[in-house]
Amino acid sequence: MPQFPNGFLWGAATAAHQVEGNNINSDLWVLEHVEPTLFAEPSLDACDHYRRYPKDIRMLAQLGFNTYRFSIEWARIEPERGHFSTAALDHYRRVLAACHENGITPMVTFYHFSSPRWFAAMGGWEKPAAGDLFVRYCGRAAKHLGDLMAFATTFNEPNLPMLLRWLPMSEIPIVKVKRMAKQAARAVGADQFGCFFLGDAKKLQEHMIAAHHRALEAMKSGPGKYPVGVSISLQDEQPVGPDSKRDRKCAEVYDPWLQAAGKSDFLGVQAYTRCRVGKKGDLAPEHGSELTQMGYEYWPEALEACLRYANARVRVPIYVTENGVSTEDDERRIEYIRRALDGVGRCLADGIDVRGYIHWSLMDNFEWIMGYRTKFGLVAVDRATQERTIKPSARYLGEIARHNRIANVAVGAA
Ligand code: BGC
Image (cartoon, rainbow, N blue to C red):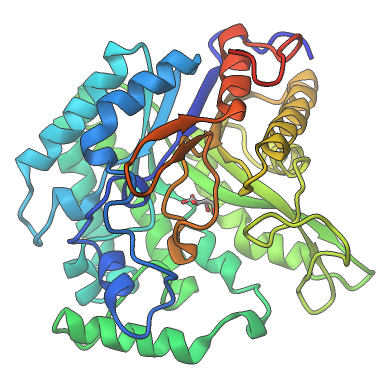
């Protein structure tokens, strides 16, 4: 593989709720603690990144990376409706400053799945007022942090609810989900609990696309000059049979958000696997295929396919804002990265404007309903001591980042 373009971003990503710990004012914290819950375990201290970020960012830089993608937490910044915490905003100023001190370009996600619990209690994204509240939060945060930001995205994978609608009904424990939502509403003293993963996906999409465009304006009206985009969840959707619903699925799940990204400064592509789509919808992976801890098919070529799909629909620069694999076998992660990057190389050779590769994730973390069992990290985290252990894959990708090329990078190179 030739050299990657000058200025290519090489990074790793995290999300506030998954790594910071004790995100107690968030809707997800509520859902984790009701009975019944879909969550295998609660997030609790997570990776204690809220306190340990200086060392984590230094470690990222020492490994050879030049970019850190992380999210700021709305539930901390606006813990009560209309009350903005200067202490929380100052915390994120320090995180941004730590990036700059280490020569790291910060890419900031304003919303990565979690909302304040008061937002859920008022009905969440389904309510028409949701957009105004989100835009106000974005404006406030951008005003406080904008001068230190290099890139920002409004939403992480806002198309996920639409994607989940394609899961076979048998995979969704509907009764449990309803009981969990009812208990969560009771826990916050409301008669509803509207969170990103629950509710009417079509309504959510409509409200979030409108909010994205307005938030983008609000973010740009503050200090600092930085591109604002949106990160979309993509899968390599492969048709099976002549009556495959693949095209209908893509039109529903990806195209509205790709259009929105096309009117932004950049698109973030996030890809993990492929999905075979038959005449009734998503099919299970073929018998005998290698599966990751998430139950996804091990399919590093998904990234190339998704970049090509996106590139055919948008005319803005593309950054890979997430790509990775959940496995205990770090050699499979190295292989995954190598094959995914070969695909990025082929896209670049064909003139596709890919400007960065950000791996999910910097460290093993709280994988939502799966809890801590699934390992996406380049760095392992001891759950009892919070000790970080660098995996060979971190050194492998770090060396690629340092040299801006794949050739001659030995596996496990220091
Ligand atoms: C999300 C992350 C998640 C990862 C692995 C993406 O959908 O943005 O929060 O941990 O995939 O499942």
